[in-house]
Image (cartoon, rainbow, N blue to C red; front, side, top):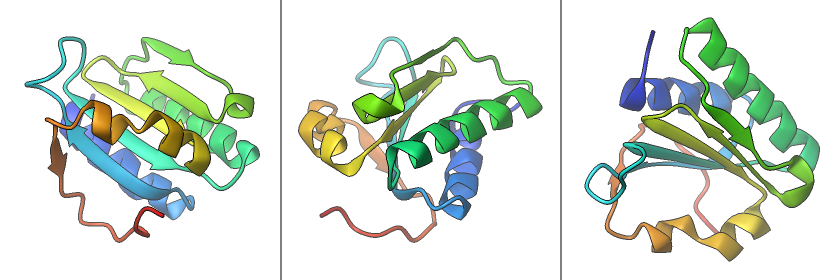
Length: 121
């Protein structure tokens, strides 16, 4: 079983290969009581969001990582997957700008992922 930061890196790399973009990993351990890391990414369409969420769920199951919950719908522009020490947020770009998790969790450290993703617009 992989967990936390290591799992986040693997999901980020694999999601980038599935055309997710603007992928960021926030270390929220000092700011959050319910998780250690937030992996935030964007998709191109509502269908793409659903596909990315299904991929992340399948990846977790294949790696024996427990999934504690999945919330949101592609139609809302935001899907959240809860793995305990890792929360994965998959957004449409406009929904991501609206909720602006980076500002809400501004004290969190941005973890370098080592993958090139387009800058925020």
